[in-house]
Length: 86
Image 1: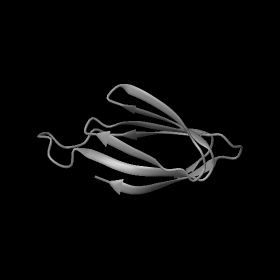
Image 2: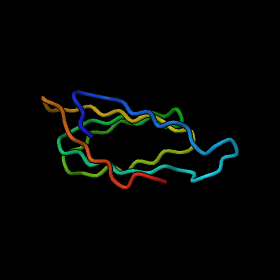
Image 3: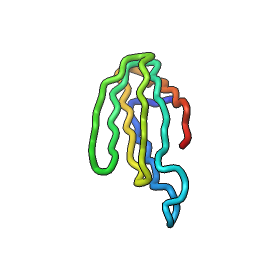
């Protein structure tokens, strides 16, 4: 993912009308430059600074959530999204 400044990703609620399917969606972020992230899950906000090359495991439940990424270097940043899925 190429981020210019900052952006927010919305993870929609999932699982269908009867709650079928996997109970979580998981991914791992690996920034190429320093970033700050903000994750909102179930109404709880968590913020963290992440240095280049460090991994950040993410897990969202069926209610979804939000992931915010803020680049700390001029000119934007690149963030790898790995192991996306349930």
